[in-house]
Length: 196
Image (cartoon, rainbow, N blue to C red):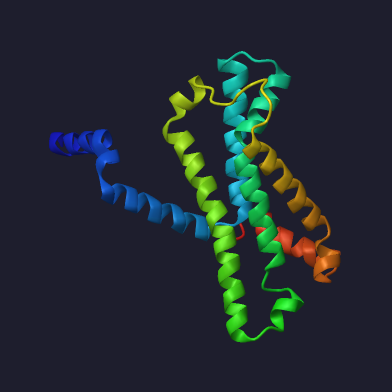
């Protein structure tokens, strides 16, 4: 038993130095991201926001307005990835009439593009959440978000991307020539976490 505990302790201390650990971690992250829909990753973003709210309110003793600003900025990239993934999932959904009438080769390319377009944001969101979870003490005590400063160019670009994506999602029924009911069904398929 002592031998096993020593092995576990050694692994815990030196796991960052092992290339096999990083490869296995990456493969498992991609596998989990592929299994779950965007709604699951929306819940991960929500959990991250709850942790950030606790961090800024309880640990850093900020007021509610500063807490909301800091939480928004800290999770802005995740929100951007989420909205872009959802936009791709809607516009390249397999049930759309424009995709159903396409030949087999082009349809498989669209399916591949949709898979990559949703898998990459989900993988990044999961990795960012797991990083926070694995380094929770550091995350709660350190503030890396510039409070009270102007938005960086990257943050401004993220906000513009979210706005453009939201506009395209609102215009999706007109652009894709589908009814609101079909858009609602696609949204439910992508957003309800227990739909695999």
